Image (cartoon, rainbow, N blue to C red; front, side, top):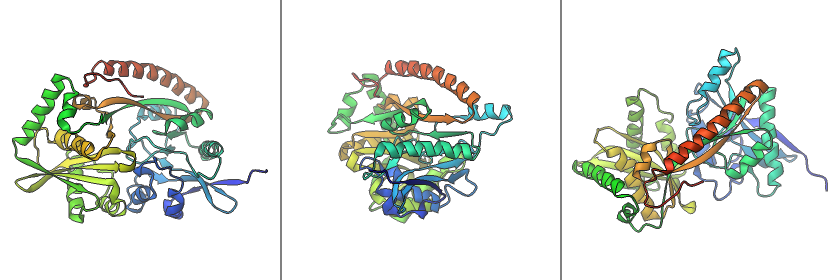
Length: 390
């Protein structure tokens, strides 16, 4: 039977599609960050688009009747902020040779270093064929528009093969994730740690307790606009203290809280019944995953960050049966608090042959160095008996 013709096109706003059509491409384990509600909120509230350096250019595949068969979340980037896979040196090398590195094509969830599908395919069609067409279409987009490169950050492992087959080079990253071993409570979790780590955590928690801090755990379904406003005040203050600007707006946070409340959990720290700090978890209960995204405080209390962003979050995960807690990119200090190193990969395609060859050699050396780094980390695993996870 003759295969039906397909067509690829770029859309500059997710709102060009129906929410039901986009979400129909998502498997049950795709996670909350790929939902139409999440990505559209970033666009609708101006967190991407405009002068942010993130131009939406989502790649979609349709059949002859304009039915959506596949898609790739895609952005044209004018910088490398908010990605968590660092290519500043590549950009500098381009510039030094009189070439423009930006804009580049980037498939990622903005500001979110979380692994997940990037080659989205309808369950009604040939997955391999649509994935191949998406990757080929991405390369064509780069070539026809004179872009320097295409980057697919933190895709699922099974998608890496489709990318490799079309010349994408892989790059390693290391994150630190917490894993639940069916702990009945936090003390049982501590019992799995080495004595040195247990004592350190208890000392940190005691230091916070001495300030008479209490905590409110607020499921997204019952969080109020004032709860979200307070969270945003804390989140914004963290960026201000680091002399930076927040990626998200309060409008975006409020919209996310109202459009997908089942995927959020707020933790607010209070002192003398006055809120002083907050952290936000993104939760995927069906798949027993949680993601630590943002934290902030308006009062400085030593070790409060560790308590609010890690220990309270771990207690929540234990209570709710969450199996994996991802606390964001980087941070070797997380290992001393029970998080294990996990290797993720991203895929990169450089249009210029000479630069592609140079990047290939760079990535080969970096891969060897990263492997040695992970081996070294394994020597400092905080659990009594464990190993680095793939």
